[in-house]
Image (cartoon, rainbow over all chains, first blue to last red; front, side, top):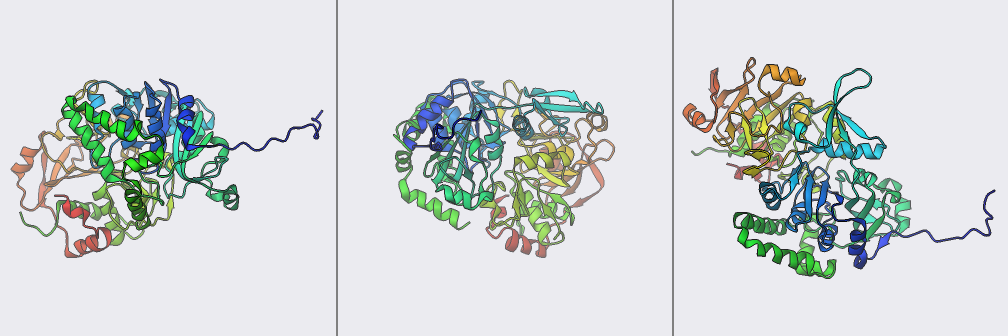
Length: 318
Length: 256
């Protein structure tokens, strides 16, 4: 029998919005030491850097780090803070220069940086979203990456016996993603042109945490469903963090803070050449990650609205 | 050496001449010169060029940027795809793509991973986002800004991007059927690949560069084409288009 409609409880739809003051606790609960985390965006755009700083503040160690296929500042920050044991990152670069902490950690053998490429990560995430144990790949041959990649195996096509590769399904414990807008139910809208692997990462991960520039009324989502890039049922928590991607960009709202990224890389390069300068890294992490009580404090420390409005201007005029 | 163009402009012009009307191709991250080449080709002899395969579709950038993969660089574009579609392009292949790296060897293999042994590298490089286009695309170009015995080596320490592997037999064994590396452009010369041995072969010297200079900068022995020539430098028209339409900000001028 169907339940008595009168006796049915009528709870309110649950909001997935997290107050910015609680986001550290949410991340600490979702991600254990030794867990796997996958970061959205790409290179210097749409990286959830405020959420990444919360991972460091939570003191997480031994993480397995995944990302959309190209990453830079934020993964270098996690490595600088000693959070990472293994990386599954296709390319790690600031484009005009190397990521110094990644480079140093690999050369000193303090992290295990697996040789993976874009198809490994994308194919592995696709397998999870499709509910299958692996994704076949044919476009690999001749590269050393194949033999050193722990996520892939050789197989054959079950129909005609053609040699194939397979990448095993990747299911990150936690996805960290940044977008421009969401409603309180976690319906995500990217206003940027590029969305990279964000929707794929959200579909493949166990717990999905998204920072946005603005939480908007649900009516805005309903008025334009084609604008929804990640439906709310894939999202566990959404948090409004102004300039939450800084120093990476959140187009069309604000641009890349190249100077800030370079200053960090300069510290990394100095420490790589002279390990006695490690205190410079700790000072950086204190100032920009550990000491700020919340993201507003962080924004004050990086130069406040004077600096941030310049990044807004830059985004408006590209 | 005084000349009316920079190395960046020269290489962009040379690459653009080889891209054909109606072809589909793209350039990835950190690819200022290749992107300039694509845009120059589209602005001159290849109006039906389809710029696709790296998520952006037919962009009209306001400024030439070192990365083509963010909104800043795209300006207007006709569409944006995601990594899911990139996975598909990787399997279908493009007409052309571009690569550069830490090391290049005589067979046109490219190393983006490490100098020294993998387990204990002297230098760990950035790694490769996507090397499938080297295998699946009809051809690719190597654009090398460092041409020295350190970067042009007999055998790459790590084979990230497969060129001609170790010759025709190895390509057959690996099932590589496309042309692979077509030209290698450096600040000093252009190499093509010998049709039989699939090794790099000197094709042209940039003005003012001597054969001895290229020999001393290259860490392996190479053959020279019988018709070795001087590189055909950019025309006034090419430079005008490059500087007014493709790169009004002058990013290529600082690449020397």
